Amino acid sequence: MVTSGSPAYESPSEAASRLGWPLARVRKLIRGQQVRHVKLGGIYLLPHGALEEYLEANTVEPIRSERRAD
Image (tube, rainbow, N blue to C red; front, side, top):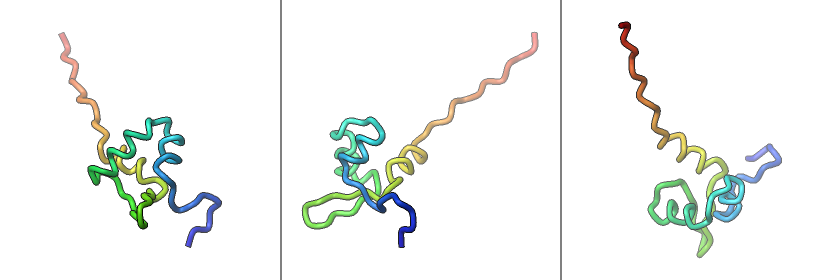
């Protein structure tokens, strides 16, 4: 049960708009099954936060080089 005011699912266009991404990028992630989604008939829906999960899982942390004392 969703108790907040935000919907549990959003369309690919809503998700793309919210993140400022091209719709084609969101559709490519869905097509490649790289992001959680639901297909109901011919409609794809993303659980709210699915793209943020994708970003977190694919974030590359920088390598911290140790500075040498001269």
